[in-house]
Image (cartoon, rainbow, N blue to C red; front, side, top):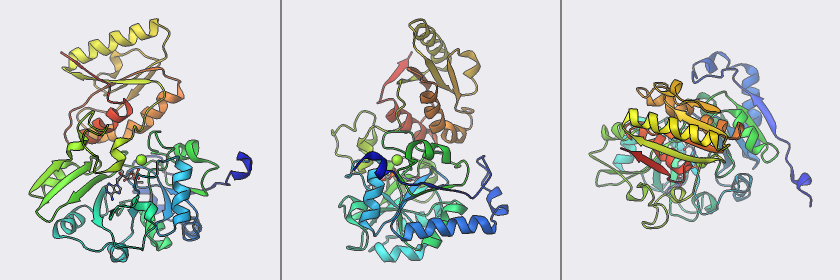
Length: 374
Ligand code: TXA
Ligand code: MG
């Protein structure tokens, strides 16, 4: 069989003209036509096909989580290693009892506080409901209820638990626009629901909540450590998250942590340290790289970006509002590829609040290359 005969016809459904992080606009455009589009997309999901859709974090590539053929198609389309389990998405809490065996008090408190929202909770799995491919054979499952009107509507119409990793080719930055999904997956999936730009811009926080009151962060994301502390008496980062530790020194509890992700094609290095020294260092390294014939790019905060000269200047917004950096990060990494950047530097930010998720993704994108200037 040739590659061409495997190519799928990808349907596109526009359900929002909004191209900003403002999701409020969707309600007004909740037209009959948008509903018809979502019915069509939901039917494809129910029939075992795979469809990309917007969430408040990044676009997801959805499949009926009970259908092994559908779930295998997701791994195939993404080129994703099959030992990395998928997050299951639901529209309402009643769906949990279908495939989760037990919910402890702390998990329930987290749901009360942050669902719908960018929080994935690892829960004990009821056997033989979901495809074993979703959980990569684990006896737990990561579940979340996304805070996005299009996602919630689609999930409700589909009526089944929907396994959905980010809708990018494995190793590429996660998609925050339908155009990113199209660039990676056109011809590999049955459809893309276009709801405009996602809001948060980095993936959900993945946590395990133990009966003893401890929340362990397996992947930092849209819900911050500080937010989790308002619910749990103890919150800790999984030791496997520490920089450079994901090569097997500590067995990763969240299998996704061990893969290199989000990497642009050029070489990327993060620069950390005292602000004025970071500025001088980046400016001079960009200059040298340019002289050596590199195509240069910099990811920097708006407070400093004007002081750099590079072929690509990509803003992460204000250092004072790290939500802007989270929102802009993946598109900035993709832009580096679009201009063919071969030499890329990124300013570090403090690992507080959303900064923890930004630094986690930047470090992965950079293969943990970081320079501390003093
Ligand atoms: O924001 C998000 O979470 C996006 C959107 C589409 O919802 N989804 C997403 O899915 O990022 P994915 O498949 O790219 O990431 C799943 C992460 C991986 O790090 C995986 O290892 C972890 O969740 N995970 C899933 N199930 C797990 C389990 N049972 N135990 C531990 N970690 C799990
Ligand atoms: Mg992903």
